[in-house]
Amino acid sequence: MIITCPNCNKQFKIDNSLIPDEGRDLQCGSCSHIWFYKIEEKNNEILELKQEIASEEIEIKAKNENKKEKIEEKKQQEEIVKKKGENKGIKFFSYLIVFIISFVALIILLDTLKIPLINVFPRLEIILFNLFETLHDIKLFIIDLV
Image (tube, rainbow, N blue to C red; front, side, top):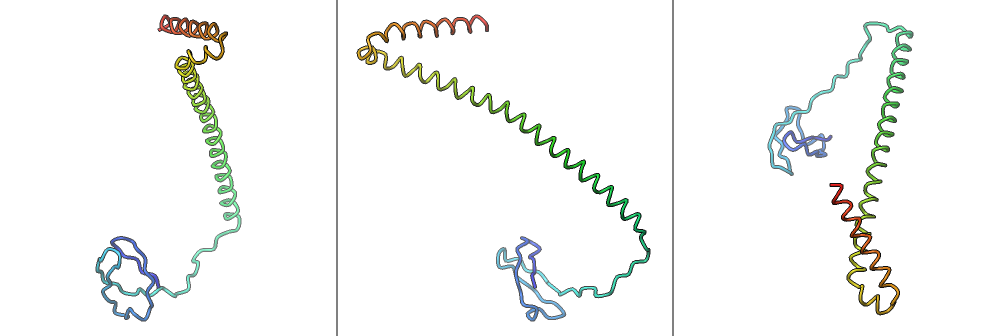
């Protein structure tokens, strides 16, 4: 038989012969709680229906339950579609933020390694100068907007 501690809800498997009919004290091995336990006799009487239920009523109830289940399924599908739509918007902004951070990191890297790159590629000086001027103009434009 399986006995559950009323204090911590830990379950223990105990042999039926260890508990007498009048009951006994038990101690939980997990929380050390002590309680009195008595085996409860299960009701072995045969249950009888006092009223007969018409098959039509059962069919009507089954149809109503099917309709409710279908309605619940549709609601769940609508919620899933809404969540997917919300996730697309969040996903787009996540990609946008990653792109902006990567672009800023590239600009910082180019600015840091500008002189060694110009020494290796002499024509790169004009391109980098134009890039930094363009970024400066974009910065001024954004400041004017704010």
